[in-house]
Amino acid sequence: MSTYRDLAHRGSARATVLRTVGTRERRSHLTAPRVPTVGIDIGGTKVMAGVVDADGNILETLRTETPDKSKSPKVVEDTITELVLDLSDRHDVHAVGIGAAGWVDADRNRVLFAPHLSWRNEPLRDRLAGRLSVPVLVDNDANTAAWAEWRFGAGRGEDHLVMITLGTGIGGAILEDGQVKRGKFGVAGEFGHMQVVPGGHRCPCGNRGCWEQYSSGNALVREARELAAADSPVAYGLIERVKGNVPDITGPLITELAREGDAMCIELLQDIGQWLGVGIANLAAALDPSCFVIGGGVSAADDLLIGPARDAFRRHLTGRGYRPEARIARAQLGPEAGMVGAADLARLVARRFRRAKRRRVERYERYERYHQGKGFGLGPQSPASAAGENQGPK
Figure 1: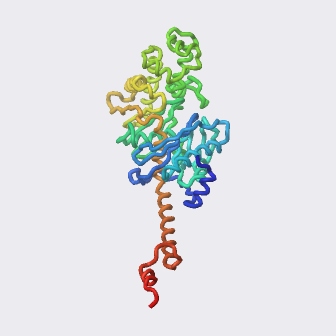
Figure 2: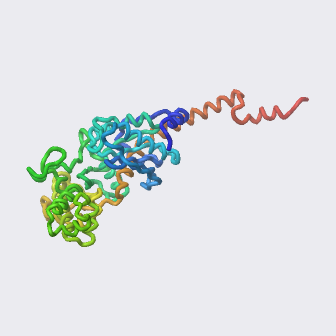
Figure 3: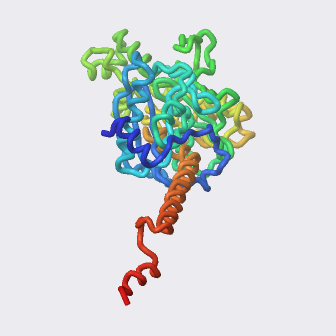
């Protein structure tokens, strides 16, 4: 794998560091250069990097564990740099997009807060742009996933889309007319912290009754473990599967048992799905989108989860029966959505790199032509001079 020292050597020979200026999607994705870019998806447990072409096809991916959150932010930046350099050895990379699990400011430079990493007001874009020879774009991972689904997945053709990511908690994003709506301060879409049960379960955010305490991976596992710890008869199938070791109960295991027909696991997913539908109905009242795309790891339960969500949505929708209903669809791009979306958003700022590279090539060509004209032997000789040499003495 390449090192930063290698990059510094290569960079001095081929390009100076280019910094982005936080360009938004003012330029249409339809006019963005069709060049390969790298997308980075940073989560609490893994960092995934991939080269993505202009049609959303993944050309190559690399994965590594996320450095422990107790370490300095520089350790994560080192990991990202190494992955980008490794991919750059085999691909002509024109820009890098990063989807970070945290709050990103409106300029898409600083990660204001990341719950799983020690990033607090971290100038991630500028730090990485100072180490890489291509433009860098930083955004929230739910925004990048939503962009990918709108461009290449379940949200294609929609002009008003809301993405909901169900994982450990709930994330979200809003797209209108081909633009991600980030809000004044860049932190729009934190749907998981809408209060749905006053005085309800305590949330790590400090409040009570947040939506993600009732419809998320954490909520699903919490309910299952409580039943198993109480030695409930309805949980015997689950208890037997983990051999009585309650901490071994996970969301994927619950989904697996539900698909096998375990009644309690099916019921747990129905409960999560019903709360999901309630929250979607609230968002429809506020935002009135044409489509909701449900992604994240919990969405792997598919109709075991989304079926109950659709039913609850119809029951709780304001003005039901007298208004059009938004479509609810499962995300199509899976765990790669954030990476693909980050790469595609980065393509919007790749134009700066292409223009700078073209100017460097033009300067070099002018330099060559100048020295050829001076007869310094750099390049082929003119036909006249060659003819003069071949005439010989008279």
